[in-house]
Length: 355
Image (cartoon, rainbow, N blue to C red):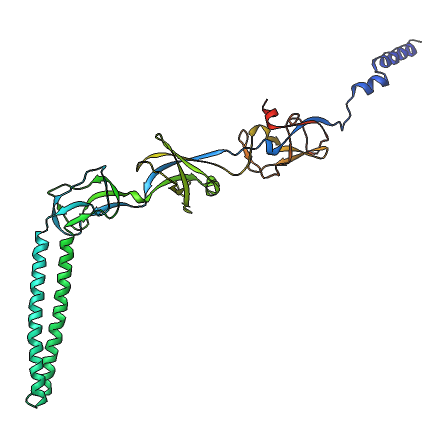
């Protein structure tokens, strides 16, 4: 009797612990229940970030003006920082040696010219005598050769005169362009030899901006308009001239050269160039990690679709190439699975999302 009574008691206890069929249906969630989400149009979320790079105002021509002859420096009539026009005298050299060399060359030219006149007269008389058979043909040929030799000597003397005149002209050094004197590299009284730097000049008609741009930003800069140079004094609009294809091996940057649209700052001024990228970027908070990949959830009919973004990084905005009318899932996105059914309660704008 004890055995059957214990068995009946256990059966009653088990049946009391089970919920009724109605309670089971009420508490259990269906395996394929739709997640309640809200969506935002991608075009209302994206933005165009501002990029920047270090920059400096430089010149196409930063020239070291040097002496072309050996002479003592007599004067340097300009000062560092002075702005000067083209053909302004920037240095004078002692020209006495060059003047003496010119006089010598002129004297040699005069001598050669006199000898040539005499040789031509002798040739004329020889030709007259040869026509009457008073001298041989060899003697006539000799007179003709003398004329040709002296003619060549006169041409050489004339070239020497021209070279001496050029050297005299090099005693006065002038600016080849409108410039700013950056530095004086020599002093009055010093002996200059050919190639000795006298001054450094900046070409004011060739001012441009040199910027070191990250490799990943170079294409964006090439398409940007406008580009601004920001300096402590003012901002200046720029236009891109070229981006060097060569990569700086240490900084991993490429040099960009930009010209000024209107006014220009002081030579050597430094600052930053700024521009907005034309690629749309999505804020970092919409990027999620699924199965080791970063991406976003978008609405595809009544399902959530995970779109992987290969360039995405945690905590950083990411460039997207999806159509701007794509609906991105905003609220309710954290627990979603790829392909899960969704129930969209509403779609919000970017302003509503911000609030």
